[in-house]
Amino acid sequence: MLQRETAELLAAARAGESDAWDQLVERYARLVWAVARGFALSATDAADVSQTTWLRLVEHLDKLREPEHLGGWLATTARHECLRLVRRNGREVIGFDAELDFEAGEPTPEAMVLESERDRVLWQSLGEISQRCQVLLRALATAPPPSYQDISAALGMPVGSIGPTRARCLDHLKRRVELHTGGAKEQETSGGA
Figure 1 (cartoon, helix red, strand yellow):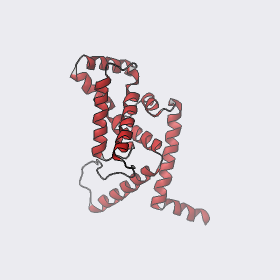
Figure 2: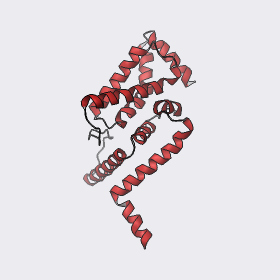
Figure 3: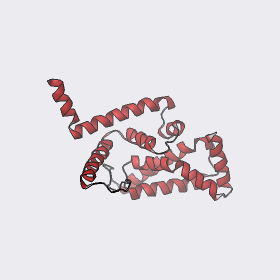
Figure 4: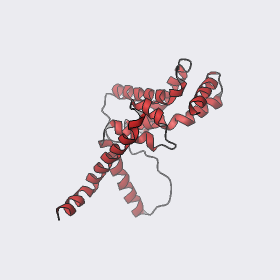
């Protein structure tokens, strides 16, 4: 049903219906953003990649042969735009910038420090695992997550391997976090006693 809806939305967007375009953007914007942030681009560069990806869709709207694979097409296009940006800027992408979106609230200063440290360790650890894992975990962490078919098309992995790959990626991330937080030392100490 989603595939048919996507095809209908693309046809309506081709006909100039702005509501159809808005629905397409609403449906796939998180996927495009997840791919861009998976390259550890700054928020500004990720926004540029996202905007360029949507521009490419406008340019190719009449040329899409398989509307049911739009998510994969968008993710692949975003990935190409990220690589183009990285090459153009002549730099390696390492780490993450500090412009992360967090829910506003009134936490205590102590809670803010703990949350900041937890987030720093998590983002640092995420940056240390493979780029494939980074992109997969970011895509799956969006709300709502894209379908496994879209992720399969975007990352070039069989649908059946997404779940097991996700589990391995989370395990790698957990181990990196433990290395940064001393969890590995605690395990070694208790294991040696």
